[in-house]
Length: 238
Image 1 (cartoon, helix red, strand yellow):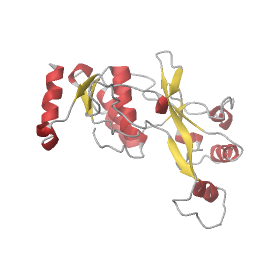
Image 2 (cartoon, one colour):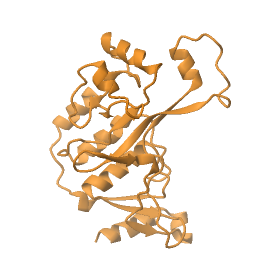
Image 3 (cartoon, one colour):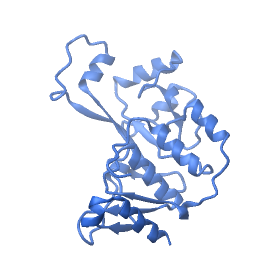
Image 4 (tube, one colour):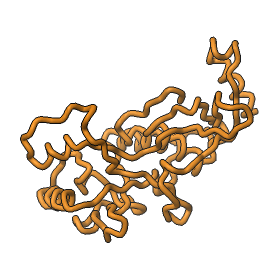
C-alpha cells in the first residue's frame, strides 16, 4: 500500500472490502457533501429528472447511511442542514461488482491472516480501505519509516472530495473563461466520517490520527530490496 495515491473511485475500496469480508453492514465509511443555495436546486433537479449521471449532487449516486437503501426524495438527501452538510450516505457498487460478489464464495482466511504494510503514503481511497479493515475487521497494520519510537499513521488524507471555482462556474452555466489552475480556488465539498458500532459518527476522518499497530524501519538492505519488509511483516503474523 506504499506510495498509493488511491484514485477517484470509492467503489474499488468498497469492492475489495466486501470481497474479503462480506458480512458487515454498513459496509463502508459514510460521507456527506456541503449544502448551500447553489447545490440545493441542483440536488432537487437531479432527483426530479431521475438523472443517472454521477454527480456529487445527485441523490441517485448514493445510498443512505446506515441502511444502504436509496434516498426516497431530495429532502431526505439534503437533510436538516444542521452543519450545512447533507445526510450521511454511502457509495454504491457497480452492477458488475455486485455480480462478482454474488458469485464468489467466502474466502477461508480471516483478518488474522492479513496484514497491511505501508510507508504512510496511502492516500484517499487507499486510506479509506486500510482504515476500514483496521477498525472493523482488526486487520493489523505496519508503518515503515518515520521517526524512531514515534507513533506513525499508516494512512494519509482519507476520503473526501474537492472541487474548484472553475467547476462551480461550469455547473452554473457561466461562459467566462476558466481561471488558470494555479489561481483557481480549491474547495472541500465532501467529508468522510468515522463511526462506532452504533452507527454514530465520531469525527471527520481527515482529522483523526490512527497510528499503526507495528513499526518497521528502513535500513540499507530493505531500502534496496523492499521485499525484505514483507518477510519482517510475515514474521509479525507468526
